Length: 178
Image (cartoon, rainbow, N blue to C red; front, side, top):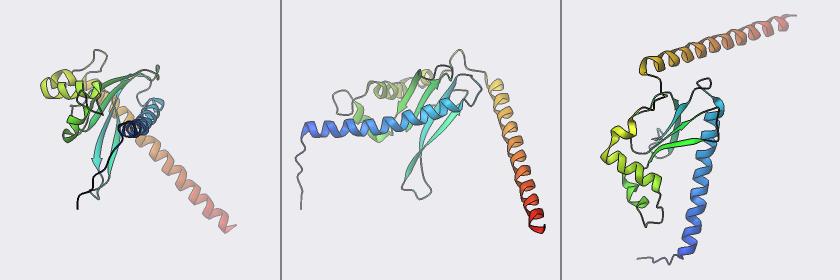
């Protein structure tokens, strides 16, 4: 049995706008949280978002990562560059959907989007341009040192918290004895 649906073009457009609005709220909220976290103490940084399947193989989630250097471009990813001192300015480097969805964003289609179309074009024809470092990006060695400093600080903070937690447990045990 075949079911034919008559879809009103205006209704479909309104639904698409609502869907885009919901998706953009998620992106905006995540970008704002990452910028506010200022993971590199005031230094400009990239925000790399890429989709990954959960362990159940069904659900997909977006991983948001702050980066000092530009990652390799890949399908199903987004890359932004931000300055925590100017949180209202977000530079979109690329938005590359999964390959099977590329035709949806072409000119004249309902999901037409110039940023996505440009990103796909560069991904196919000039990845080096997508992946080229900005003049203010640190070199790999400097970025590695910054990452190591952040990692060391996180380990010290975790050790401090564990010590305090252990101390609290030891003290609570003493109060039970009194």
